[in-house]
Image (tube, rainbow, N blue to C red):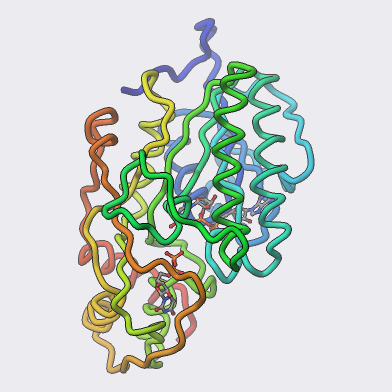
Length: 326
Ligand code: NAD
Ligand code: UDP
């Protein structure tokens, strides 16, 4: 599966990968993974939602570079880049709605800048797309062939439509300029290094449970999500980048499906909390159900998640216990 750690000419030079959003939750795990594979990693981040804390354990590594940069502006690399992972974009509803216009710019201008960079370096580029391209899905579970159901003028559109245009750009750059693209559609992923304050459901509930506060379930809690543990997801992304047969899009996620109420109960149990559940208004356009069909990833990448929710939550609760001031 894994192809080459040196360049195509076989000069022995380490493979250089550029990871935008590398100081974020997923990005920091991906930086670590690529370094462990013996690659040279350039982490490009504007630190909007990411943090130096996420990557401080990598800073001493001579194969790790950090460049503070906003991908909305063009980026020029001072060395040859073999692969680009494009993860730079605020990912939680609270953060991507904070400045919706910047979110669209990150997805559209940022994508154009990174595809331009890929063209110049003849690098392969992987786009971190999302299950949000399916919007509030009318098809369940979601297959890659489903075109989705997105409200293009709603509060989630800056992210959902931004990510849809980013996919369009990847395929147009491929058709028009022969750029070597990979697109993965990531479903809700959780684990250590999620930001405690980014408003996503797993981090919100764990922090609330550990602090003995009420868990805030939005709506009636019957909406569903499928939660993938971070190490599983990173393995899937890496396999997708390092295979030659599939451009995507390919779904990456854990097909186990839970209501938000079930998740709240599991988190109260796992963290042995005395917290209660309270109900708050459901945000607009909140998808009713979500579960990935991962047949394609299983078949083409020989990938499927290994860590199920109970085990993943245990690790994540331990992480927050050691990082959040209680
Ligand atoms: P995150 O917010 O922790 O990471 C995003 C990173 O990108 C941060 O380090 C942030 O500072 C950086 N960033 C944001 N805008 C930037 C810009 N304009 N220029 C440079 N850096 C910028 O979120 P995450 O969960 O790690 O998500 C990473 C990627 O994966 C995102 O593109 C997101 O859309 C995608 N994704 C994540 C999930 C998930 O469940 N975690 C699901 C679907 C898709
Ligand atoms: N949610 C909730 N309480 C919270 C945060 C989120 O009930 O404190 C719900 C939210 O309304 C949604 C689900 O949990 O139905 C997942 O939300 P998240 O923001 O994590 O991800 P997304 O909606 O983008 O899948």
